[in-house]
Image (cartoon, rainbow, N blue to C red):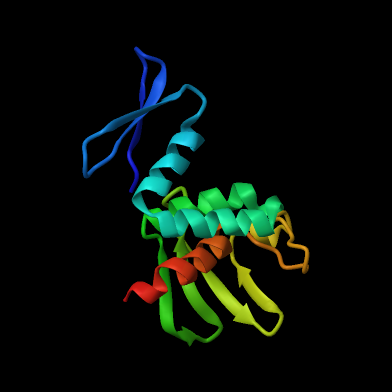
Length: 147
């Protein structure tokens, strides 16, 4: 988990790099920039995978960075063999449950409201992606090969 704190006296966000202890500061209202910087320092492979996904699908920028949060928090459980159609379980970002990701002939689906309400963004190929599906893809690209 990446720990970014807001310093009320200085009105800025602060992140301390765990290995060196170096302190980095970011202006108020720029927590997202602090998070992206921290990810780039701690896990360049994940950062680059997220940037590539956004370059390929700009409409997924918001859900991609939310997905990176889930990956950093180890919120994805990928099954070695699908359980029925379920290939993974992904934590909800509010911490109150998990969503099943299913694989079908037409692609993947998620149980979350963002996906089921058809509000999740579409890629150029017509695939719909919520943050849970993006987290799953990022996990497969960056974590699966590490074991």
